Length: 298
View 1 (cartoon, rainbow, N blue to C red):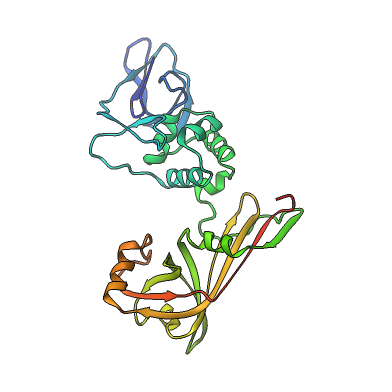
View 2 (view 1 turned 90 degrees about the horizontal axis):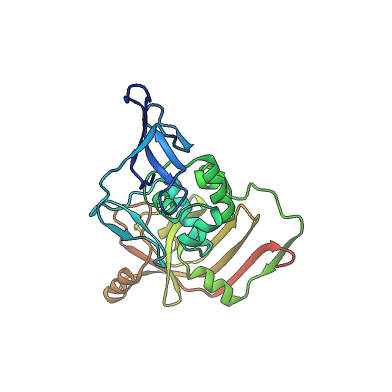
């Protein structure tokens, strides 16, 4: 018996041949498509690990041409031609953690003890993997099942236990710049008529300056014409460690048409808040500091 992801597993009554139960195969544990399978049953929508017996057979579904999905080209996953991958929340988090660890799908699948095709399916389509699969994936990716499920999405970071022997050290300027250059979300601290405010913004580093887009009437726009503080950080909940980088410098609005066009072309981030945000603010660092918390032996 061999199957592909998306095939139907049908269990028949040995006496009448009528279908007793059927479900979609959503997980493969062997690259050659042999059992066991993770099956989502149509009658309960639950996913269970199934070792098919003699009363079961696979009903194949047309999958269309295969395409390569691994950056190393080590394996492929089946997806209908012309249909863009539609990863679910768990799949997005798995892919993010895998890439953060610098692992290919083949490497992560080997560490998790699962077929690369199953991991590709999980990352690219809405899926509900078994608890056992999530535990193996969390262990392979150095994180927790709660993180993969997004259980702490509405909670602030840093609620885990502190390290037994933490080490706090200053980051060198080149280490600070390397972390800044990754781009993403940072916080700009500004003074407003209502008092100090700290606002998150999506930023880039272009030509050595921190730049972000906003609107003229927004709180971040109050940074223009003043010296401001800008901060980024990262917290590794699973390892109870992290780092932060602080920038201080003057902020100005970019108005030159050529400079605005250059920023628009080179920017890697777009404002998550959406809307029409065409005012570019640039912060030129005059002071750059950072700190990192890690185990004492690192």
